[in-house]
Image 1 (cartoon, rainbow, N blue to C red):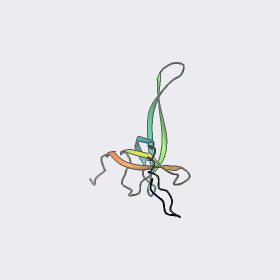
Image 2 (image 1 turned 90 degrees about the horizontal axis):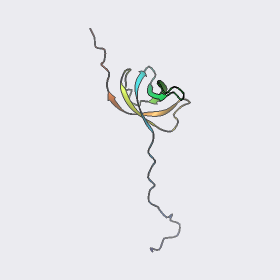
Image 3 (image 1 turned 45 degrees about the vertical axis):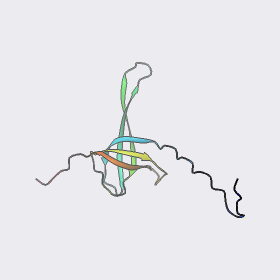
Image 4 (image 1 turned 60 degrees about the vertical axis):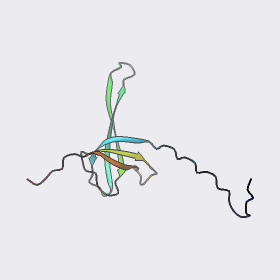
Length: 103
C-alpha cells in the first residue's frame, strides 16, 4: 500500500457511464434554430383484443449544426434538459430524405 501525501484526494477508477436511451425516428419539423421535432413510431398490443395499434410520440431534439431536415431518419439520445421540452440530442442522420432542388 502506497503512502499518500497529506491534502491529496484518493482517485478512484472512473465509474462507467450508464448507457443512455436512444431512439430512431423521422424529423417532422426543422423550422426552429438548433431544434428538430422527431416522430418516433411504435406498435403496442391492445390488452383485450390483441390487435397491434400504431402509436407515436413527438420528441424535441437539439441539432447543434442545423444539419437535419424534414423527412430525415435520425438517431437521438437522451441528455440533460436543455429547455422546458427539449431533453434529446441528435446523434446521427441515418437516412437523408431527398432534398428539393431548383427546377
